[in-house]
Amino acid sequence: MSFLADVSHLGENFKKYFEVLPAFTPELKQETFRIRHSVYCEELGYEAVRTDGVETDHYDAHSIHLLLRTGSSTPVGCIRLVRPDPQQPDQLMPFEKTCAAVLDRAHIDPAKCDRQHVAEVSRLAVLGSFRKRKGEGNTPVALSDRDFGAPGMPRFPYIPVGLYTAMFLVAAESGLHTLFVLTEPRLARHLSALGIKLTQIGGPVQHRGTRIPSVLNTQENIESIKFNLYPLFEVIEADVRRYSPAAAS
Image (cartoon, rainbow, N blue to C red):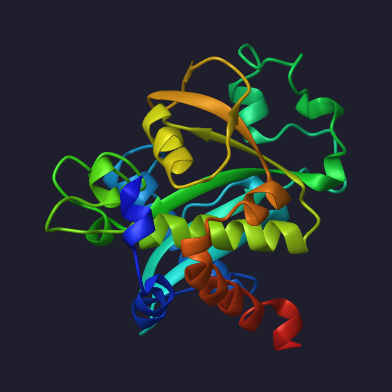
């Protein structure tokens, strides 16, 4: 995409409006659960509305959560990394159940991977007030061809790129080398256009619409970041390190 070559001040612009951080405290996790409830339960109806206004499941106890918010700490979006239960490492991750019949196990078999070093990218969600452009209200994250720029109206998808970049950094720090993701075909295509390296590992499956399973290598994606995205990468890396549990201790 020629737009990426013309982008300037990505890091400055992100820092001006957003920050992204590991949600390692109970309070920060609650923020992500409330975002998920707003998007997955109230807006899209993927899950039942809950009286407490938070959307959680049993995978959350052994997941890594990330939160993106504005500079004034207004919640914007979230993402999580579901790790196998350390007490039951053979327990299936969500996508393994959903895609059991369509995975190409000759390419990669999640069950045969080192379960200490794998995770599933899950619960990517952005609040409606930050994503609802025309035709984009029926998906948990907005990313379209227009985000790569158009004559007279350059744009950049700061929110999903910020969440994915922070996710890769935290995954690397946590020793998670192989990441699985179940996405809409369109989202997978747009992530690829941004330079995120996904490899499809199975056929389409019906799960809240058509979804395809893919695998990502953490270090490969960090090392292949486009040169002109480095200023943005450095700002997000600084956020992640500043808010990491080690920095807070």
